[in-house]
Amino acid sequence: MIIQKVLQTDLTEILALQKHCYLQEAAIYDDYNLPPLLQTIASIEEDFRQQVFLKLVFDEQIIGSVRAYLKDGVCKIGRLIVHPNFQNQGIGKRLMEAIEKEFLEADKFELFTGHRSSKNLAFYKKLGYLEFKRQVISTGLELVFLEKIVKNDMLEKIAKNEKLWDNLVVNDVLCSQPKLALTPEKAKAYLLNHSFYNADLSGQKVLCLASGGGQQSIGFALLDATVTVVDFSAEQLKKDRLVAEKYGKSIRCIKTDMQDLSMLSDNEFDIVYQPYSINYIPSVEKVFDEITRVLKPNGIYQLMFHNPFVHGSWKDGCWGSGWQQNELWQGKGYPIWQPYQDGYPIKTDDPNWNFTNNQNQAVKLESPQEYRHTLSTILNGLISRRFNILSLKEEVGDNLDSPPGTWEHYKSCAPPWMYLFSKKTAR
Image (tube, rainbow, N blue to C red; front, side, top):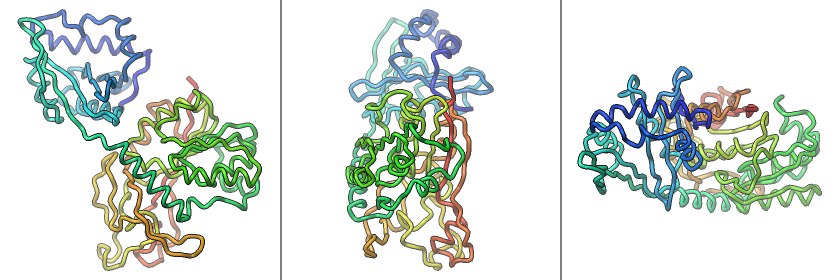
């Protein structure tokens, strides 16, 4: 079973499922003129233009759906439906969790159901929704409005991560040291060590997403690609401007959160290259939506992300502070204890980045917050947006003889990063 965004071509099937499901409600109220039963295809098409629709597909059949929209900070959820043959299997809960993730910026979620729909009322209350008003529709029907107020601190978290990243860059963290000695040959070895890009990138439009620091952007530019780099850190983007000036290359630099690429055009890029960055936001949904929009059909998306099965089992925020053997289970085992839950804020034993800068000075700074993204979230998120998976690789160390607790030993047991290549299909 997979949850996907609804396509306009799905609307006839969604409407048929809606009418089938709402027969149960009609029987409860002895009213077969409920609005969901009378909705037309023209009406649902209008809803589709203004709302986010999700579907749950099983064996190529839509068996569940939900829709919602945001107004003045309130996400209004409606028409949660599950085929009667598949009810009481957790599908409604999955759809509700998915639609809430689509609106992480919301301050509150609202929905309504009928006063006699006891199963619905109990279900929503289990999900944290509380009644806040009632509205009489007729002598036999009263609508019960429920809400779930959330503390929307996502923007605050992203803003804090931005400041922490600026601080890391100013203090010369390794991944923000610009590449000042690249040649086209070195750039090709650095970036094109896979067969999914054209050998000749001349004229190709490349988006380096959340990729500031003067490393990947100049590599692509030296291969004569047309490069845009996006990052939320102003300090990172300074490095890209530095290398562009040094090499006499044009690199478009845009300061924005990776979830908002509204300044970029539809079908603009041949390649979206995203190094390790997606784990700094709680949800991948808006990022994947934006990538789907700006990437051309048959374009390539390269994504680096944390191996979700071992995320949080290293001692600090990067790779500078190793474990002591007496801290490890039986002197060898690395701790895996945090919930395998998408969006879970990862905790480390040492909440800092410990590294050596290019002046060979030891630096200790607060880590930006990272979030686990499960493998199913990553893969299904792309598959549901019509991406073909081309390759999935792990970064595995080759030094198992190193002392347990060292970075070299850890990488050999628990590969920290994964690299995913996918292609957007032509519809």
